[in-house]
Length: 353
Image (cartoon, rainbow, N blue to C red; front, side, top):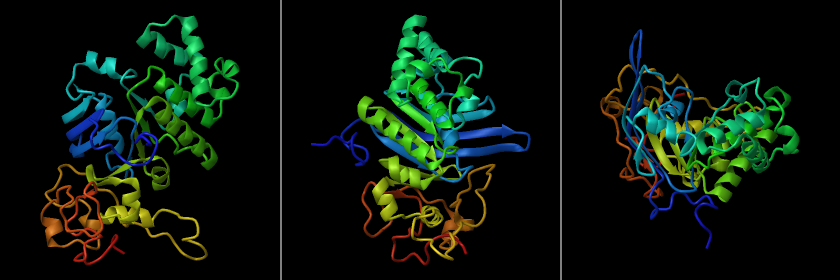
C-alpha cells in the first residue's frame, strides 16, 4: 500500500498533525494606525505532507509563516495558537523559539543572495548551523556539509563546499539554502516563494529536491507561493488566503477541479495554461487590489471585487465551512463564501468584469 507521504492524497485523517495552527491573528502597529495582516487562520500539516498557501501579494501568506517561529518585527502583535509537535510557539519564550528554529522548523526564503553571507564559503555557512545546533567539530561539520550538498543535488560537492555564494548560479544558491534548512533534520520546512526568481527548468529542479526531501526524510513542508502552477505540481493540499483570511481549503486535485470561492476561480482563470490562451485570447484578470485593513470588517473582504456579491456578503463574513449545499464537493473541501461557485443558487462565477 502506498503511504500518504509518497502521493498527493492529502492529509491522513487518522494521523496527528505535526503542526496545528488555530485562530492565528497578526496585527502591526504603524504610524497611520493598526493594520490587520492575518485574521483567525487555522491550518494543519500532517507528517510528510506538503501544504501550499496561495494568494496575491499582501494576502498574509508570509506573515502567517514568519509568525510561527517568532520572526516578525517587534511591531507585530500575534495571538492564537501554533503547536509544533505539541509545543506551543505563539507567545513562547525566546529560548524555546531559538531551540525550535533549525531543529524543529526551518525556513527557505526567496532571495538566497540576501540570506547567504557573501564573505563565507557555503560549506562554512552550512557547517555553522551544525556546530551551533548539534555541537559538531568544524571538521565533522564540513564533512556533513558535503553530504548535504550531495543530498540537494549540487554537482561536485567536494569542490562546491569551498565556493562563495557569488561563484554559484541562482539555482545552486537556492539548493545551498535548502541544505542549510535541512541540516538539523527539522520536522517542518517552510518554503517561502523559493522558486520565484528562477527560470522554469531551474524551478523544476528545486521542486524535485523538495519532493525528494519529503519522500526520503519524511519532512513536512509548508509551501508559500502565488504560482498556482507550482502548487499543482508540488502540493497535497491547498490553503487559499485573501486579505489575511483563509477563504478556501481543499486537496489539490479537488481545488483545481471544483474551485468554490470566487477568488480561487479568479486566480485559476488568470493563470496561463498551455493551449487555453492561444492566438488572441487574453488572460482574465481580477480587478482591484487586496485591501489594506485597519480592522477586519464583518463582511466578505472579497465582496468589492466579486460579481456574485450581494447585501449578505457586504453585511456579514462567511465562516470557513463545507455546509454550503455545494454540488460535487468533498467534506474536506471548505470555503468561506455565501454563494460558492458550485452552488446552483450562485448568480455568477468569478470576479467583477
